[in-house]
Image 1: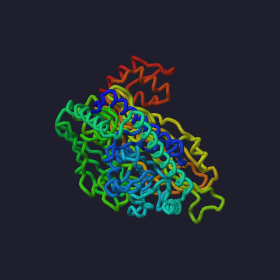
Image 2: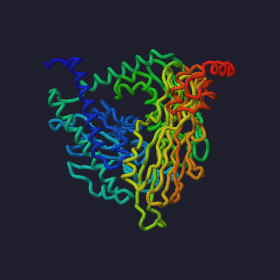
Image 3: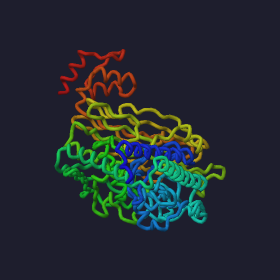
Image 4: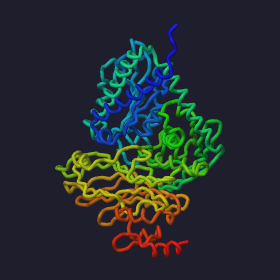
Length: 570
């Protein structure tokens, strides 16, 4: 009888699986053609057991890709029998309700064989720039307006690419070269993981992943349940108003903690919009659970076991449980707000652990030029998607983080890459003073970015942002962060959502939101306020108005005047 594998050996195998998926993610980023993948990390990568349970996921990646991928593999298994899978096969879909919530995200699954036996699966997700239709804007009337839908299908069969499918994808895109390159990068990503998994199993002398998988699941679930049991049991509610598109939207949540489980119910949230800001439940679940995992056992790697104690539900037809075929191209606008919604519930149970609200949604700016029939014949055709971020909410013991990709994890687009891949010129990019909400701990700052065409040609902006009317809220006396703002440098305001043309020679100016403050601003040490002023993070006016701190001409604190100001503010 073989000796039972020790806990130490199983832990080493677990760590090795994490190394496998981290290399898998790097392979995708190093070979991708699109900047949003190559530079911004809009991806996920993971390894799964033969039943589709996620054993490990790469550190690099977005919750919207990672946590939807965790369920997506099971959808593949429900329509593609394991008995039909062969070495060299790879499967793909971009169905929003089976994958990552909108058409631009492609999910690949590759069966893994060791000594010709199916032992697991590897999967990855990344964002393709253009899939035809109306593009990445939210103006489609249904999902069919938004581009090409691909059901779970064989992309590669026994090592041979499905040339017909590749041709269809290329012919239905304004960026066929980038799309083709990105799909081959996804395939290479799976190939790398498959090879490394096979090598790992040979090195450790194991015939399957059953024992290490059971260990990962049990340890992760037990740790997560223990963390939940340590929290105050009960039900807690929260709601948030956001800009919406055709109407303002309320996001309402009820969170129940008990018996090692957390259940979130979005009953009371607004109904679906007629525009593409609706959120499939798989994506809503992904971000809601991510917010909870930041609080409960965040040190435990993300896998099927650590995700098991969380359940998310919403009435069919509400904005966070969109039903096929409503438009969903910009599901991330609302989906990325959901961590703040569920953390707002927890703030009532665990006030000393939960930060203030942050900017939350990416300031994701799809730009396109040169494709209209009226475009100048010399205009360069381009389609890019720029990702930028605002500030996070202040934390119970620290300031918020400025210009930080929370919760998306998608890095901000670099100026040099933007200018090298499209005929655009970035005139300005800097922190936005006074955008972080004042508090004992200050909210993180947003940023100011100015962009224009290098060819003085018009280009299209697909507005896909929120928090233009409703700011990130401060808590426990902290002030709200600044709202976002889109405009032309001439002063003409732009809408936060929808297709709009930027005239030739005009400069697009957008300002990302700041995070909310935490605690009474008068409790912030005057020396901290003075340092913020010296660093250009806040204005002298804000020092007096928000913090009750008077500064001398040299920027030092006027202690006498400050005491008088703060006394008058009480």
